[in-house]
Length: 267
Ligand SMILES: C[S@@+](CC[C@H](N)C(=O)[O-])C[C@H]1O[C@@H](n2cnc3c(N)ncnc32)[C@H](O)[C@@H]1O
View 1 (cartoon, rainbow, N blue to C red):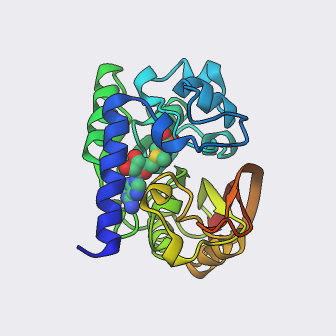
View 2: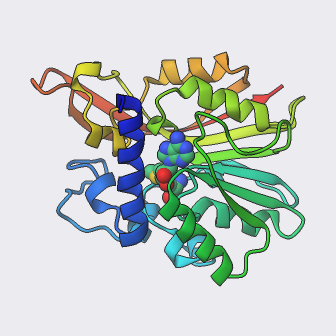
């Protein structure tokens, strides 16, 4: 099996386990991060989500099991979601941002969550059914291969801490571009992690990639991938230092990992 496939399998295994356990601490909270925590301290998913910008009162209005504490930003906060919008959430996990968006688009709108991990989809669909959400749908797909949504269909694409996990960011942004409505009517608002220095391929660890660290691009390369996909009006909406860690196994230098929220428009 080649490295890319092994990585995908590992991502599915780890996020599948999080879906079943409902506990993200072992995978997604690094040993020393900007919330001043250590991996030993157990964070509830609600506390983790509050720390990255979610409003607890809004979280109380969505299925509790959809909040896993695995995001590093809050795209819905910046997305100006309107009633009637068609929204797609990439790497939707157990559905946190899908349900937050669904409460805003109401019955006239629709929110489609996409994830490649079977157990995440199962959990998200159970959440939707149990809580009677009729304006949401969860589809299986690998977002860097093909997003299972038709061309020029979507008002808004959101995503929280997922694109860094893909091995070909440019393809992912091209797929997002394809499904958005043209002529300035379609936009994306993405929260993700970027790095001050991309790690040398020899030092990439599967575990760190799955924890959203080693697959991160520099902010410049991230923006460049968005531009190459055809997007215009690229705007950084939020930027926070998330953690610092040693650059490589020999401890040379420091890598800064930053959480960003970014908006771009399909012209
Ligand atoms: C860090 S979690 C974030 C989940 C959710 N956005 C949240 O904030 O709770 C990453 C999610 O992306 C999914 N994922 C990773 N790579 C993917 C890909 N290439 N295509 C589709 N889903 C992917 C994983 O299965 C996992 O559910």
